[in-house]
Length: 68
Ligand SMILES: [Zn+2]
Image 1 (tube, protein in one colour):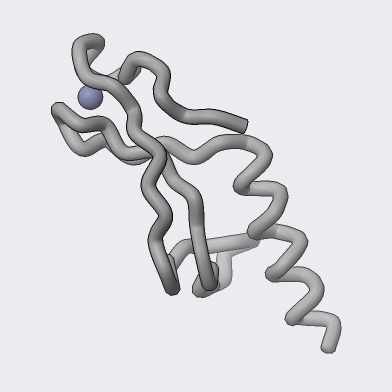
Image 2: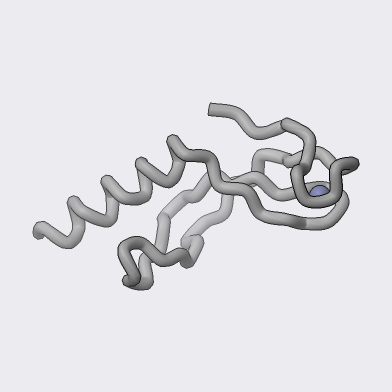
């Protein structure tokens, strides 16, 4: 998976790969903190992009925690 593509929001910026620690998101309608989330942030308009592979990873972490 890779970011680094052209931003769809402003059509001028580049979506950069950014790793956020303890990134708060919502999975299946529930708040969830991702320990180390790789998200894409546009260097021009700051639009946030989520890669499909990354979202699947978060869901896996979320489900493994819920089942404990
Ligand atoms: Zn942009």
